Image (cartoon, rainbow, N blue to C red; front, top):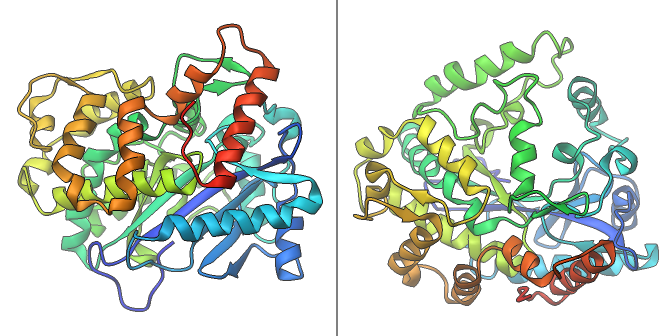
Length: 411
């Protein structure tokens, strides 16, 4: 979340949002008690409350809590510790309810048609509208937890540079951050099921999400005309009261928030602990900054990459990091001269070039992720061949402990 009277320039501030499930301490089943948690802290049921340097807020469903920076942070350095303190505080408040927080992007055993409880308090008109149009009792709505990164821009020129860079990075992100390998207690063949559901949950009105990768538009006027206006028109007959005619209706993988002069990256699965999330954020920010500064290729070259091959690469990357990138013009944007390389190897090459621009506290977590694979891969490696609910709960209890302790999961 970014908010400030005068807009920040590129990379002068960072808004980080982390979403967590609230689960039973023993069974790890989801528990719809976010309103009771916020009421404990605020003295009344609220949508959002400041807790130290963070804000705590509700989401669409009653079993999810969002922790976010209270306005833009000047640096990513030290943010993992601030979020970890927030996690500990929330767990302390949840203890009397016999609940705790759990990371990862999807609950592996949740039945969303039976267990979904929508937020019934302030702003419920918005959630009711979504539910009426799309039906929110499904994995793509009620069983999705993510990290959002908000990056600022001060004017149209900065917006164009930032949007061009982020478009190129989006297809690679699932190979770094996938943490949702299980649905309904079973494997689907994807490492990032959250994004597969996210990609399809609004197909009734396809203009809302497009191809997830945003179109090649690089000015506010073009964005308003080619993305936002099209989206508003598409939903108008369903949203007769105009409740959803806002910038956040746009569900692409990165969305422009002109009201706060920021672009919000939305395709990152939440990890097992804030240290992992902030490490991933640090690598992404360094990469986006290098692209904005035209380290390897000019802005003109970056803007010429069309949406279709980016969207196709994104869809393949949901399966893991082994898929091959064979677009020389795209690879050249990252200074890679190979004509063919796996997404996982591309990330390792990118990290080798950016390592010393990333805060030291985040290098060790990144090296684990790049060496062992994303969290989804480590979860799968920890499960026995013939696993069932008992084995799944055992692994996810370890993940809940990782969140409590602020440590990455080795499996």
